[in-house]
Length: 419
Image 1 (tube, helix red, strand yellow):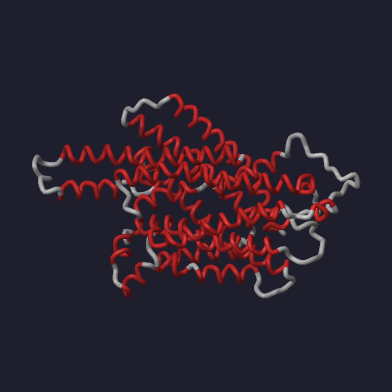
Image 2 (spheres, one colour; image 1 turned 180 degrees about the vertical axis):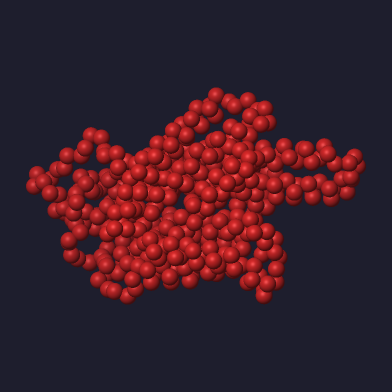
């Protein structure tokens, strides 16, 4: 599932990027053809035309509107908002859960999960509200990626230094074996599917990245071409962590006595006592710091769309300090909304599954393929056979994961709310 979803996500991200370039090229040619002869002798008209072309297609919604009309814009806007707000909300929930998990391991009670969520939201004020573009948070994002890589390395080291006796005692069967089901249950498979899709949602911020970095020409194409390489990098780390955990934990990971979180599960049974391994502390600290530093990326993508809808994007970028704070009020309200949702719905797994099933599958796998096909038909391009086959595969993955994940995700969320 990791490899399948990762490769499909890489293909759809690459496809969406080239769809944007195709639209920009077509509109740019039309604007040059309609300009008076000799009006661009000093190059100023061409530069203005390039700026206008980039402004025409600077969001997921712009591409969807060009392909499917006003209904496409509304559909993309709703799905993007749900996905990006959901990601920010889930990030805050995850920070709270990780902090409380560390408190439980060290048997201390400092802050509750909801208090940690409020503290995390306060920390995000600077990168999310005072900074206005993803470009300004580039260093933070790079450090967040480094933290994620550190976590992966630590988990692998921890897995292969785990004491076999710590896991062997968790087996219910005295013979030391567990019969794994030949075919896993559909619920576990579908929820796993949505969890993995959520991890490959980089396509939701790709248009914002192209705009914020003012990427055009060769640089823009290089950025889009790099997306599939970055997906391969992420797939490599995910697979290594998964294989290492299963290779060491083996049958014990199927035991009800072992925590489903591999970071905790490799430490032994839930009721076992003892000192907390150093690797667990480093891994939890790294992944929590990664989430804190990565949250501004989806937040800025959502905030920029909101500012464009309100017509204040340029004013936010160019205003002075006093007026700058005023034009940033929508960002502050957006962060407050995400915080309120995280505070009221602090259920990481159930919330993730619902968001990924509705918006994740649609924006990552389904919509990019439909938009690409629609734009190519408008411009009378011939869709190549391998694009048809890969597109159909992505649509199948998205529809299957969305339907099954939504059903089981809603059941889990309703159960969490009742509990």
